[in-house]
Length: 341
Ligand code: KG4
Ligand code: ZN
Image (cartoon, rainbow, N blue to C red; front, side, top):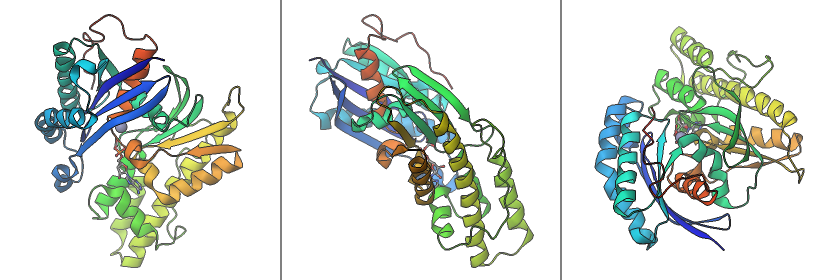
């Protein structure tokens, strides 16, 4: 049996992360999985500030890699490759991660593997080893909102995506409008629990159009208008959060049902539906998607939250799978690949 041990590095947004993963005959084993979040640095600005993120990555990258290597008990010479996110992401952070990964790869004479951040997310449910290809993936986070058909390594088809804001971004902007702080998702969810989702009639753009594209910008604007009209009581604030979350849930559920109806499960006839990204933490959205999956005869797979949000384990896995499949050429690997914003 062939075993590959890979160091992965992720720095494309506001988490500095490094992980060491061992892949044996397609089975992934995490030897370490370090994530240093920068939430506190960005919280005062109610969003991720690219310049602050780049500086934080530059400060934290070495320490984070060192911690991951130390925890894994693997030496640099025992690695089979070094993988880093090469984009898309905030360019300052991507550059830091790639330079770090390339330098380590060269110093240790190992191939460097450039990993597309979205491929990392697409493969993330496979960290749990119970998610064979093919599957339908809904990726919903602060930066992403799309349906992907994942048929195999390198076989991804985007079926639909947001035409404006990502869902998490809509949660964050709504929270900002309502003065709830950052990140907005958890705060909006908490208030929504005590509210009436029918209280405000909010738009559901693109809901009844064919296709799997989604739109959330109009919804966010409608929330801002509703909030500006009145001097809101606590009860009204809860109703508005519940109505916003209800509209988002409606859009995601309706499009997920459409996507599942069309999804070809392949040989074993088993439809797998994976939800990943920070928004997958939302209990109301998760419950609604579980119902949609059941109605479509599909199984909902939600990776643990740690691997739903940005992490380096998924980057190490993508790197190891690419190495195992022979997609990385030469002793130096993807050393010539540049960072992509
Ligand atoms: O995946 P993630 O950690 O980072 C990236 O965007 O890549 O996702 C963070 C996003 C934020 O927009 C946050 O508000 C949202 O996920 N989020 C939630 C919840 N927890 C986090 N949205 C709705 N409900 C939640 N419970
Ligand atoms: Zn991400």
